[in-house]
Amino acid sequence: MSESVPVRCPVCRNEHHYEAPVYPCACGAPLAPRLDPDGTATAVTHRAWDDEWVTVGCSACGRESEWPRPELGCPCGTVLRIPLLALSAEPRQLPAPRRAFQPVTIRTARDAVTAAAVYLRWLGYRDIRRADQRPTSGIGLAAHGLLAQVDPTVNPASRRDVECLWLTAMTESTHCVYFSLAGYTPDARVRADSLHVPLFVLDLTGTPQPVNSQADELDATGAG
Image (cartoon, rainbow, N blue to C red; front, top):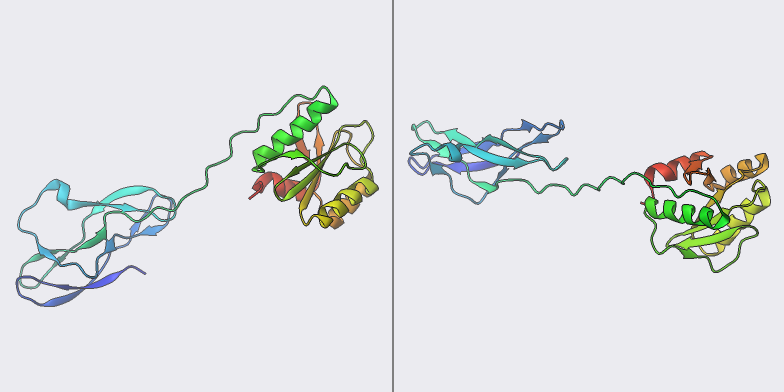
């Protein structure tokens, strides 16, 4: 619903009710100029091109566009210019899209840890460091709100590996994620799904590949 305000004609002193027009933004959202309920309408005595248009900002996408300035014709013959609270609405702050992920080629076990850390940083995690507790296999990484395990060995991660990571994360009241170079055993994947642990496989290009739905969701949404 658009805004409405009382408008008094400065010539005949009659009061009218004015409702702001609603315009269609290019994004599809409705938008309308912001009316000033405490302002005073002025009579239009001459026309100028710059005075005929008003900038209206869309609160949905932030786009600004030009639309006719609101006016009202009084029965006495006076054209009234409606007072505006602001020329544009306050645009909503949109999150910046994530840049494309730049992988780190994996040649050594150290490269695997680096690739996982780069990926976590790309997801939006900060202050990535070595975890205080050493995992059952591989290397532990920690970030604010997250505990990660990177397994660069040639053996698939086991059910016990997943459970140990989850238990450690539980004791620290944080989320967890597992990265493995050799993949996971079938029972490890089943257990990870039941514990809601995201599983990733590190390919040799250094790009983590989601293994389960929890990993798909984390890859899509990031740390936020």
